[in-house]
Length: 460
Image 1 (cartoon, rainbow, N blue to C red):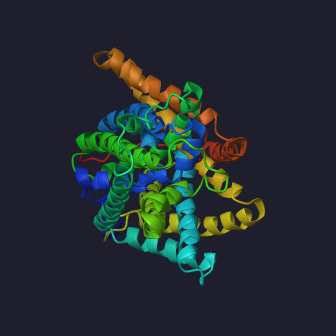
Image 2 (image 1 turned 45 degrees about the horizontal axis):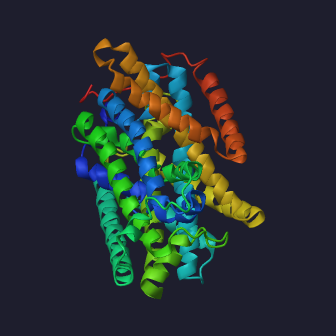
Image 3 (image 1 turned 45 degrees about the vertical axis):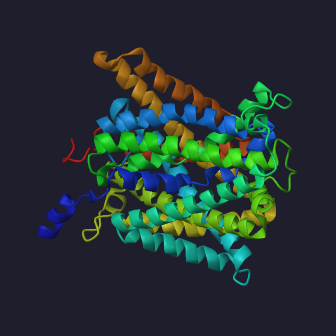
């Protein structure tokens, strides 16, 4: 009986400060976020990558502000699931939560597979399947150590990646400064008349928004942060701004080296590494490659960490089996079952991804990334809609700016979501149909008394 009462009283451990959150958010997004998609943005925007990154930042800030505002009202690990369920309707909350599960499960899966591929380039003697076991086990072990340990690991990874970015910027400065002395040359990354077209710029921006995917995970730590009503909003907006400023600086330096010339199909994925070799030689080329491996390790760990909290919020609310997903480890005060489940899913899923990739080529990875965005942007739209409804419902908060921010956030996210690839939309639709069918059966038609959206007692 005492053990049962203790289990009921168990809560997540409030151990994170504002900057712990910022570091975790930065690692999930990756300080090197634009490096992997630089070639794609450059080709679409005809070299105007800096402008595309900055426009994308402005666009995603609307959604970041909506997340922060809703976290002030509902500081829960359920994040968008709770915001939409409490503010709009329990059925809509469940649907958004199910879409988030897709996003949060696929992210660590893709990171595990990418890390294995990158590690094979460094130590080709071990097979892909050995590497995915190593990485999935390491991510799971690190996240089972407790939230403070996970935060410290994220801080170390983040500092390491910042140092490599600084090394890259220094190499570019040395390579460019001695050759170019015309001031107009340094404005070309923002605007080059010969190649500029508005349609091209916005085509690049539609890809550049992917640089910011992951900032929403900050809200899933609401029950493990001190003063969540203040710190979640600050951390979410800060991560978006820091990511935008750092990404703009990285791609600005890259464009000074490369200009607006297009990349070939074979070089699009490794475009940033190619620029690194041109700026700093073979050593910088290898350092950047290794850093991209480390960045994806951090992103994989952070995504698994956030997924565990989301599943806990949904399990506690009875949207998923509460006995398993709503349980807390009494010693470390973490959702241990969820961390283990996500680790196993990432391991099995990355093996399947590689299996299909061998038959479909790189298209399997691209479809996986698009499916991740399918779930993410449904959550983004849901949070913006919830923020709009709340502002509309409360007269004191019904200001023009208060209504415009979530409205613009919703429209931008809906536009991006509608332009995902057809395979991603089909697979996402199948996932949603399965989830809605499961939820309808489990909750007897989404009756609100059977799906709850709890707020922890210490901040309620």
